[in-house]
Length: 195
Image 1 (cartoon, rainbow, N blue to C red):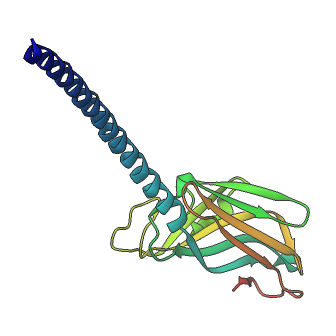
Image 2 (cartoon, helix red, strand yellow):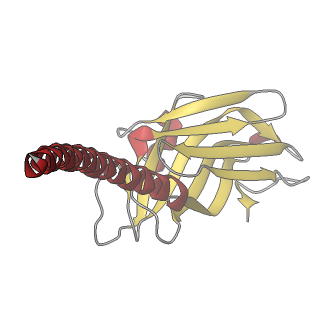
Image 3 (cartoon, rainbow, N blue to C red):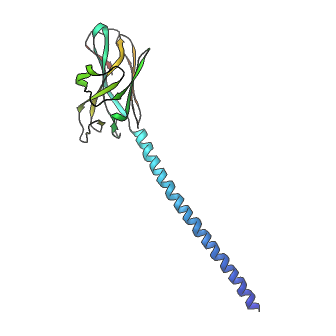
């Protein structure tokens, strides 16, 4: 009888022990599953953040042309990718020009070439011309090694001594902002604005 009571207590302890092992196994599988999901989300977020912060443009030059009545209409900005940046698609890029009393937004138009900028629409589209093509060059993209001239028409004639702000805003990455002004005296056909 005495040994029977001990056996019954041992069986109860064994059942409790097995139940604890089952609960621990279920908890461990839930933790492992959650950890995997969180790791995947963290990797995706890290990649997106690196692309957002690490991708940026660099302005090489900004100049205007026309020269009639001491003003400029046609704008040309030479750009390239900053070191370590991912490629940028021009169709996913917005160009904006702000003057003292007006502004205009521009979208990429593959049909326009900077050599024929007179066909560009005021405040409508911008065109590009590859001045240097990198080894991974793709039409309509700015890739590592590319140097591209962006051309567009100002929303109105830009006069002498006027402030200009040109922004190139890619869908992913940091915007490029060139804040400058026209010279106080413009007599040449080509007017350098930046640097």
